[in-house]
Image 1 (cartoon, rainbow, N blue to C red):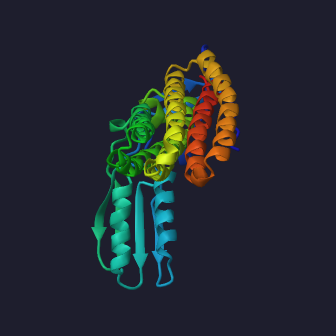
Image 2: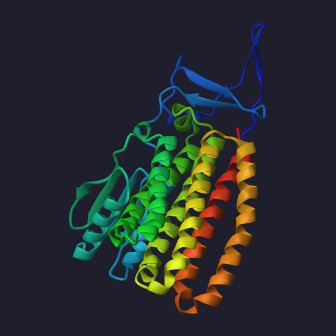
Length: 331
């Protein structure tokens, strides 16, 4: 920790010198304007008025013949989420077709990433997205819109026995994943460069709330996919008619709870959030009763039914998690 003494300047001002490393890194010159923000803990944060043209160091990943492609993709996604503006892949031998296809998959899976340089031994991927074009709140709202449709469509497909509607749900899940990674990336960038968050008029506490909400939405979407995966088995079995009606009723309740939890998050409504948490706590017993009752009557369809019931339960659980975060991370 660098400790500096306060000096007096004139009759009404006190001054503290700035570290030369920081001044040099940000190109600060004489008479350069700086912004100062007083934090709730009494500390002061100093920002250059003009942000550097790029943030986050480049991440270089060396590839060999022994490189596992699944692990490589995870490394690239990790570098993206960590906030690196540039990802460089290097190899002593020419890149294989498999590596080039993996890079193409990575570009499709992420937002704002493009290959800007490519030859046999080096591939450079850069972030070309202007952060201000995808504000975090707007991104989380988009995630919720897609995810809610996934949940409601999975219930509607069960109600109408519409397998075509079911088949679209997994495709929407890919878009939710892309946006979730983008939210995680921006949150990490905000932690390293708080002035970027300030440009969105977003506190770090709000950024954390949106990040945690995005993670819950991503998991809710996964359970919508699981419901859509196992519901066709019930659709094809005439013995499942009564079970399906019960599941549809429970599914509509899950959709409603999810919607209310997201509205509470947007409004930072802790009172509503607490009511929703208590409502969901009572629903847990209802799901237990449903499983116990229907297992005894319909053992032959118990496996798909159990997956669907658990999916609906988990949607409610993650909705409760969103509400708990509203209470815990209010500004």
